[in-house]
Image (cartoon, rainbow, N blue to C red; front, side, top):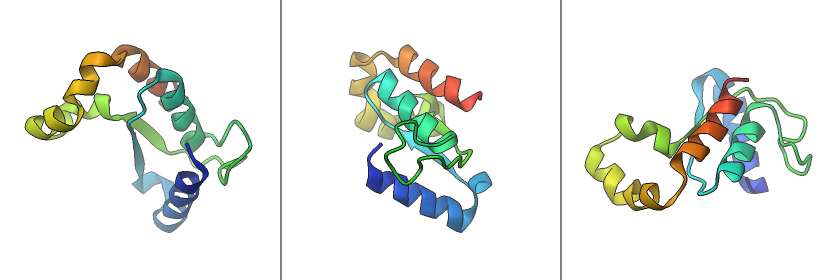
Length: 101
């Protein structure tokens, strides 16, 4: 997760409170998605960004997990192709692991 996004998420959490927010991820790799989920929940593990040492406790979900929560036609148009070529199970497993902590 880039430093600019970390800063925006930190500001939103300060403004609205962590209990009012969730983060929707769209990473194409399990490891990157897990790293992003870890960053918004317990802090930046690389200690390089605004969330270094900052535990926001935010819940993160990958877009693949929200398939049944959005309009099917829009999901298919925007995400459907990626669902066919990426390792969906690995991505969901990685993100779910950080949400369970």
